[in-house]
Image 1 (cartoon, rainbow, N blue to C red):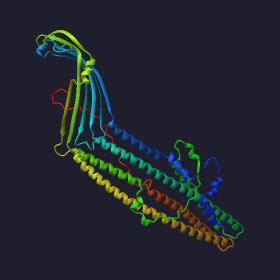
Image 2 (cartoon, helix red, strand yellow):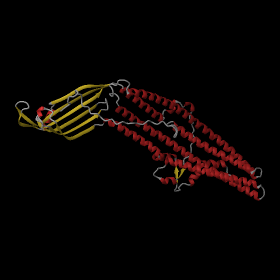
Image 3 (cartoon, rainbow, N blue to C red):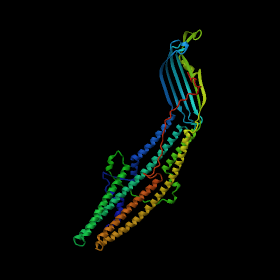
Image 4 (cartoon, rainbow, N blue to C red):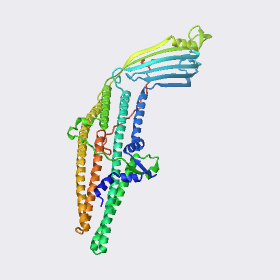
Length: 539
């Protein structure tokens, strides 16, 4: 009889089965690197996380839109008939008609949080008032105004706080993509080696069934010649039925393992991939150098992406604290403006006392109006300060206290995460050691079980053993073979986990998710300068 040990070790790697099916149109010889490449290219969960980076990038654009120059314009006409409220107007009302337009640009500055506004206004007015000097009158003017915060908002306003936070969240999203890639690769490796092991287990169970069937054949021959009682044949046939059931279960487990791997690497658009048989062609490699558990400490998790993301969140909270600290200051602003006006149209020439008698007209064209405007013939300017300060506890003071607590809380979560990472890495390193030792123990047990089966088989052939003892020896050998398969699978899983845990948490375990961004639209105000209440800022 061929030695079962040699057969089991050969079947463990499934190389014979793989080569037998090479070239079959429905079989894909799959290396581990190819499986990982397919997962990186096609895994929808990883693609969804990549889109999260684009979402955060668009939020940066949302926050930076606060600094986008805003162009505004309007054009309109109006008509106004006023009652005769002045004794000079007599008993009739005054009909005034305007055609007007205004065009301007305003912008918030990225540094210093100041805002500026440049506008150009023009109008044409007709009226039947006897007191007017121009009919129609043409008016035009340009104005530049600037508002600069001196305390509150100068160093950190809401627009800048949002921009800093969203840019940092893009970095966090990129770290999350790297973290997810590590987790996906680890999941693919786990699924790959699990499929390899379950396929080998199918072959081991098939070989065990064949041994039981051979024992049935031998017992039937002995029963036919009266050398063995029929009960031995019934016992051997019952064992065949049990091992056939084990083979069915092994095939089901292998099919489930194949679908788990397929789920990770399949292109969702390629539905035919479900009908392709995946045949893992790589062989597991035993690790020569085992990790040293005692040296795993603070430096063991310096490359963890989730820890880096948690620190980004802590930096965001620090930025928010800085923002609310700035918001507690008095709102003191420097307001400046300059305006230049021009006037033209058809001017009435009068003679005599007030209001005088119209003796003629003189036309002053729009070119003269623009000359007045750009020549600063009629300038208007203003410089001043505004001060606003809340009396009592402000919203910003309460928000600062809350954010300070959240920052301290985030710091404690990072400390807890560091301890958890250290513990998890040390446990993973111990798993690598223990599974390597289990492989050695399982191999030794398989060798002993094989020797015992060989002895019982030879004794059975010469009539010194029973069918029950041979069956028991076969069961023991089968169990040691399964134990070896499980130990080798656990060792590969431990190696994969230890490697991945140095960069990312386990997939499906406790995840440290970033809080994301909430961007508030910030319309740009249009400063207009300071003027005495009731005084006109222009014409």
